[in-house]
Length: 209
Ligand code: SF4
Image (spheres, helix red, strand yellow):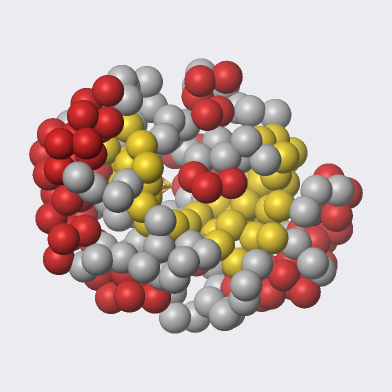
């Protein structure tokens, strides 16, 4: 598989925020979000076997692993890697953009599917696979990166039309104030966590390594 980078940092997003985590960023993506902050990972990368990536992760000596991209599921071997990491006793977060089928994933208690729903500001909302929402369970998370009021309104529509079984997170696009999203969640009585991107608070746009 093509690996863009592997590094040790803290998880900057979602329910495992703040935990030391081994990140494996696979190359390639099938979307082109307007505000993508990992464009460099959409091309190139180093060819590695599943065994080689597993060794890299073991060398970082932490339990939590985040498989991210790009879009990891663009590479069929990503599912083999997930299984190998889980068999190795790791807790794995798979960050996926919501446009590819999730029924290929193993059913495992230590797998956290972190699915994005791409809001209108991304320009890619039309690519979302709504049937994926039914596959998310209590150990997973559904994340909306929100840039403006239109995104917040759309996120609420999606949640009311497809009540999720997993925790829901609104994350204001990097650098934006949290306050509009917090006011929205409180006024609409939504059971949603508003969370910042912790790595951006710490390191800005620099890589968190
Ligand atoms: S899905 Fe992620 S990596 Fe792909 S274009 Fe959108 S933000 Fe960038």
